[in-house]
Length: 90
Image 1 (cartoon, helix red, strand yellow):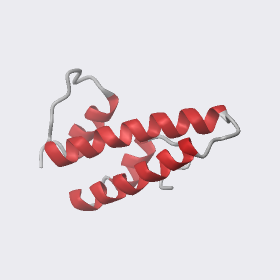
Image 2 (image 1 turned 120 degrees about the vertical axis):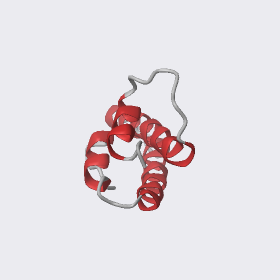
Image 3 (image 1 turned 90 degrees about the vertical axis):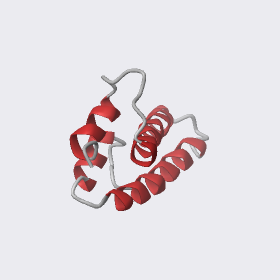
């Protein structure tokens, strides 16, 4: 995974200088990995459950912003602020 800590901020920091289509592709792959981590947490590992579910949600929000440039209902959303800071004006 690109972010070892399941942090959307860490993910964006590592991919912010890449082209939008590369970021989109990597976000899709990363969200898939996070979903798998969440689904495979059979031992009810709290960190894996929280990390996978929350991280995947943030990545999917970023994917939607990159694909459709949709403005969320709450523009103070952390993921939306990261999107606007790095790709929102493209």
